[in-house]
Amino acid sequence: MAKKKSRPQKRRRRSIIAFEMIRLDRTAPEPLHEQLYRQIRDELKSGRFGDGSSRLPSSRTLATDRGISRSTVRLALSKLHAEGYLRSKPGSGTFVANLLPESFLTADQPKNYQPIQRPVRISDRVKAIPDARVGNQFDLGATGAGPGVSLVASIPAVDEFPIAVWERLRVQVLAKKGVTLLRYSSNRGDVDLRKAIAAYLCDFRGARCHPDQIVIVAGMQQAMLISAMAVLNPGEAAWIEDPCYQQTRRVLSLAGVKIVPKTLDNQGIVIARSPKEPLPRMIYVTPSHQFPLGITMSFQRRTDLLNFARAHNAFIFEDDYDAEFRFVGLPLPSLQGIDNASRVIYAGTVSKILCPSLRLGYIVAPEQLVDSFVKIRSAMDQHSSPIEQATLARFITEGFFLSHIKRMRKLYAERRDFFIKQFNELLADHFTLQVPEAGLNIVAWLKREEDFALIKRITADIGVRPTPLSFFCIQAKLKPAVIFGFAAWTTTQIRESLVKLASALRNHDKDLNYGRQSR
Ligand SMILES: Cc1ncc(COP(=O)(O)O)c(C=O)c1O
Image (cartoon, rainbow, N blue to C red; front, side, top):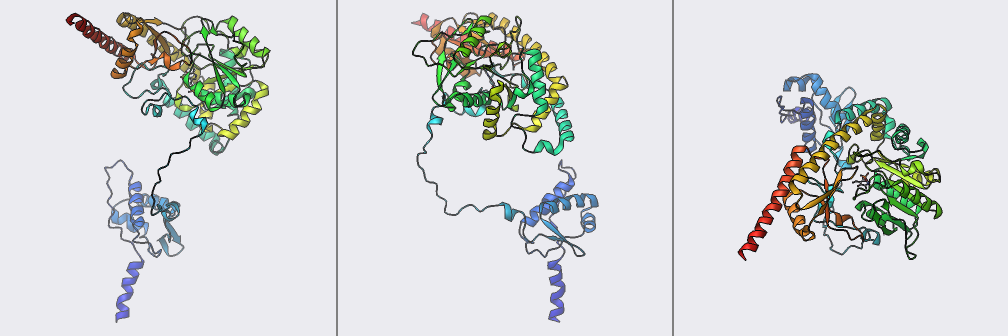
């Protein structure tokens, strides 16, 4: 009798799992099959059915029990199967896997873990990178612009980026090229993208190049790093403009290069050198629109620089980061286009034209350097995302790139004019604007040097955050100025920010006068 009694009990324990805990919510945004999958998975993970002999009810039973369709149940079960929670026994049904996938994926936390506090030895390479960080600013990217902060230099209007078009093209390239885009790919970059960029640069930037000279990189910084590593040994000299884009100093320091700051005049970088100054292997310049002062390098200085580079066997690194946004006068051809001795390494980026988060840029390398650049990229990080590269190639060849540039140039021109007018109306007592021909920034020189500390404090307090010019200076001793960005803010936001700054300065002036009178 006892034997007979225990049999059905054993059968029940070994067989059908009841899944009484399942609660499906038809009003929830999560699809029913996902809810079912998740709840069964959690139940299996709880360990109550871990002996591998527990059988699942049939999909029909589960569907009837829960009042849902069999296809919903099948979807949930097939996902559990695919992930290794279930196994099928032909003729017997579906069982819980002997070992759930978690057992292969989850490492135990080591017991008796006691962290030891010791000073860490950091390499000289890291220490050599200039770091003017305040608080956690660095984590907000190169520009340090958090939410609610306005008029920060160098920020493009990313809210105008045509996300829907980009997404559509991305889906199309994925459908067309499929798994090819998921593999490791060319260290030079997507061939269609290289063709599209070469054509764009020849048509619009006066460049002279073919697609095999193009190396796709992860933005301007990587272009600088690869170039410096290819043409300079550690300790050799590179000239850079002073003041200069702060990331250039950091990148060249990382490459172990000796940085020689060079002054600027109204034609661009000054080439004359003192006998003590080491000859450069590379000269970094921003000829289209000097960062941050906004000078356009004159034609004469361009030819002088090329002659100098040729005479001294140096390379010129031409950072053409935002030449597309010119508002006055005709653009001069890139240095690359007038270089007949293969001395110019030209580099561009989509950070300003499209958005910085894509991390895509391009080098036009002198032919004899292409192989070294590609070799370094292969040792560094192989390549940029093939999916984004293929999407960008389509974006360019289908005309969206050019159309976006034209639209943004017009929008920026309107914002720039508005900024200048409002600024001069509201803040002319404190600043003199120096309006450049191109770019997304404007330099405002302080009328009274003694205002500098006050303006720094006020702009930090009110969240209108131009960058002090001194931030970009290495040895240059320039009069105090701040750099405003205008591109990423609507005219209403520009007005609000300038009014806020003007009234903060006015209040301060009033307090000062009151203090003087009451003394
Ligand atoms: C002079 C200069 N070059 C390049 C860049 C952009 O570099 P990346 O392509 O690394 O974003 C900037 C951004 O502000 C810049 O000011």
